Length: 357
Image (cartoon, rainbow, N blue to C red; front, side, top):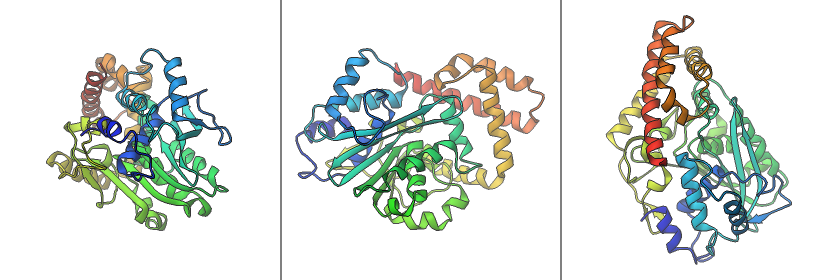
């Protein structure tokens, strides 16, 4: 069954009846994609139920606010859970959103019970700034979103509640990094960290004592056609789940297949195995400086073309390629890499736009 069918099946079962599980984690991880500004408080002392937040959200946005797939599907999940007994009374607070051309970050706190909270970190949305941060992860640490994720988690230093961290896509990486670098008092309260098809870590962080200290709490979930979840260095102890889609489209949470209270396990596809090997070879081939030059060159082209979101690439492909060819400051190797990458991103954006229509 699908995640939406799972919600329907267990809608009347509270967490005392059916314990919190990996599927619930994915459902809650999607909530950070939703624009809850002026609906959910930015502080912890004022809380609102999911049902109340849903009522306010759908009254405020009577038409589709955002066509990006992650947002669209998060709203579908939100709509399904607001009137359920299982999720409707969960409390929301500490909403945070930062989004401009340089950075993209969002998080929300979800109170599952009096002594347990789930902190949901948003993945990459349609903003080019979010994708730029993903690329920056290959040559620097921490990027702005990771820094914000750590600071957000440190808010709970004095809290006595147990903490589950989670996120989808880049949000999974933020959950992992926050769990590694939050202060000791907060780290001692973390019971689980869910990285749902999110990037891994740079070599230094992956080999660090901080990673070793939280590795037993880390639960990495990737689809059988994983792409994003195999970026950078990552544990090989991940759960591969069956997706109803192939290629980059398997990144979509609503494609992940469920059996009762867990995802259906699958074998990693040949596509993903080749990608995983290629990514590691690329990481070993180029140093931080070369990765930085590639990233800065790519996003300078986006900026010159006035491209701020993924969907805009569909309308600016020829202009982007023209700017690359005309750029005298970019060496031949970087130009070749950029041309090839623009075509890959174009195909990726085309798939996303098709799904969003």
